[in-house]
Length: 162
Length: 303
Figure 1 (cartoon, rainbow over the protein chains, first blue to last red):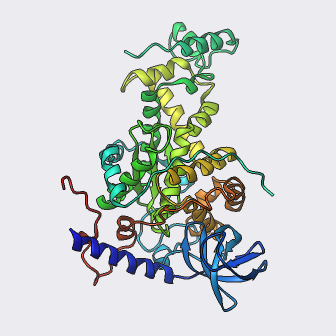
Figure 2 (cartoon, chains in turn red, orange):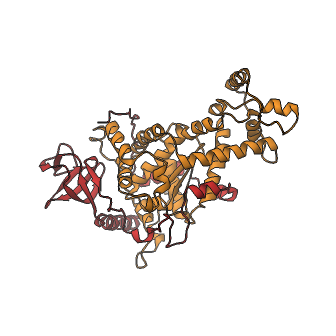
């Protein structure tokens, strides 16, 4: 049990590292500070100006670890816009599509307006979907195993968009 | 036998009293049937019971599955249902028979239908950076179900339909002309809805609720923010077409979510970005990697 857990943690760490290496690029959209840590009261490493390009190294909660002009630090996720060229994941080749947006590589069809317009109800698939459901108790057991911690949070009111 | 619905009778009376409208089915059926057909659904869809909502949702989920079948990957499907069920327990409708599925399409999209059906595409699953992003997407869809957004949108499209046809649809299983007519109208309205999308305000609300449902479940609420960021950097040519045409601009959604979240979650600690059970499933194992069996999430039945 203990060794399985160690393997899991090792695999997790390795995969996180691999994922982090698929660097995305972004642009600072709001002037602000570069932080030493992903916390609002952390030490500040200096100012960031609008339109500064950044390379995203890591994501943690609402924060991005970035490289910007030779410096490395943390910036709030919402202060950065991703560049259009940036695509998450390393498996972009498998997602290449032709001009209609349909997949070429695997031959699996897409899911667009025409597919929906022409669809009829598939009762067999619906039955299969029903068999997939997981009970609340089993879901809770998995969540505890994954160390997820519940908390009470109230819904948000709409904010004032600037 | 169904439980009596006091609201129903009120609506019926309202619908009857306003029925100066002419019967639409002149060529079909007896005079009695004509008169019954003249009673319209009006606001009736708002007040259906849970079983009826699930029946509608099942038909619409079946339609979406008719457009793209389930992915044949039991480990991923089970994982998705475990995560989805956990998230749904932190919504206001934990008791619905929630069902989650990955459909085999490279496109990026997620759907929900009334009564607790949530479908995401394989393309979406594969493009999630971490588990909190997937949790954010599922929680957004769960919010649509909780707030009955699709039901309300269908209500607008089906209000002129015959009330007796709808009641036949709910009460008989198959082979009834009245029921079939409602089923046909529902399917057509449902297709129109999933092609055009919900109202913008419904999407903004589902975003605001989604981040909270994710946070209640122990995930970083910024997962959904990350997905919206991904969407700001995409074009319709990459399999995002239908999604982008049926949702408000992601930048608009981001700005609104930013305004609603503010600094609310800044001091919250202990929220997860990822978990080993997701990481293990996210990417296809490389040929040299440890066999998938040993990294699959385990569910011991006993200690």
